[in-house]
Image 1 (tube, rainbow, N blue to C red):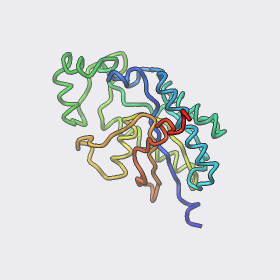
Image 2 (tube, helix red, strand yellow):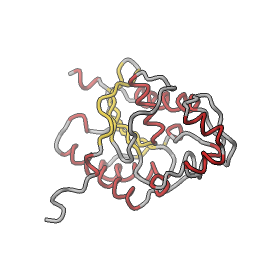
Image 3 (spheres, one colour):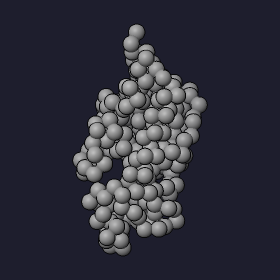
Image 4 (cartoon, helix red, strand yellow):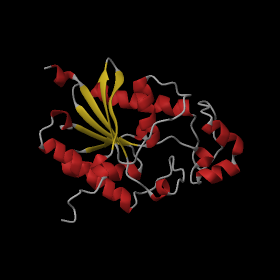
Length: 225
């Protein structure tokens, strides 16, 4: 059957961190999930395990991969525990490195680095970032790191179903690649914590199947009954 030859990717954003909640930029800084993020990871894992038990063919995951940052690894481990899959770590799936922006609130970045902040918000994809603890990447450099990593996992696992746990910027790159959006266009789509975003890979390219699934994060209606 043709369906077995299709490589499927569920690209998942990590659960919430305290820095997400207060709009503080993380980049390569290694921040743990907060209580809400851990709840989201458990809900995500339960939803994907439940889909598998209900026999939805596309949910039978074969491979589980995470970025090497703690917020992604913690989310992925919650999945691995219920899906009974080993966890592969791939540093290429890290968030973009924001250099001197990292660790600052968005409002602080705008005040401290007005020129670089304006270039960032204006979608200057080759705009460089001020130095910080980590060396910043341009958006183009980041995109050119992430997309080959995602496609590489698909190429190495043809016909399999992959769950990749990563970051908002990684999901943004995949969305743009699948829809053929220029890197310069505004990000007018939401990238939500602990969301499931489904793609297939056809002829070496990402094809978007569904975006921003977060129904699993709502507390069950009958919880209090």
